[in-house]
Image (tube, rainbow, N blue to C red; front, top):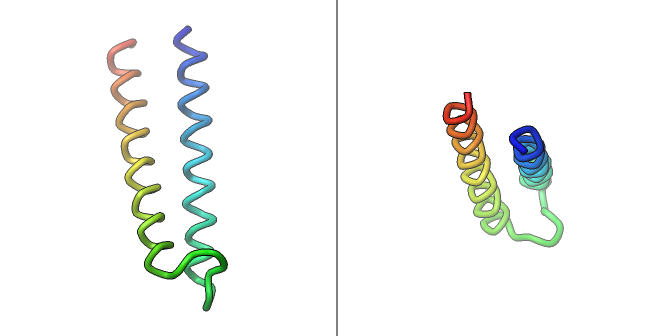
Length: 66
């Protein structure tokens, strides 16, 4: 069960990282499609916060189950 849980969390982490990269690319364009610049930056901050929380979760899980 432990490995499967970590696999799911690492998959989630990968998805958030991909989203961060996409949002960074959008922010570098002169006119981001679909989102205003402020909305894009807000979304980027949210994803980075999620990534930090996921990293903390992984560290805690590994610490508890090691």
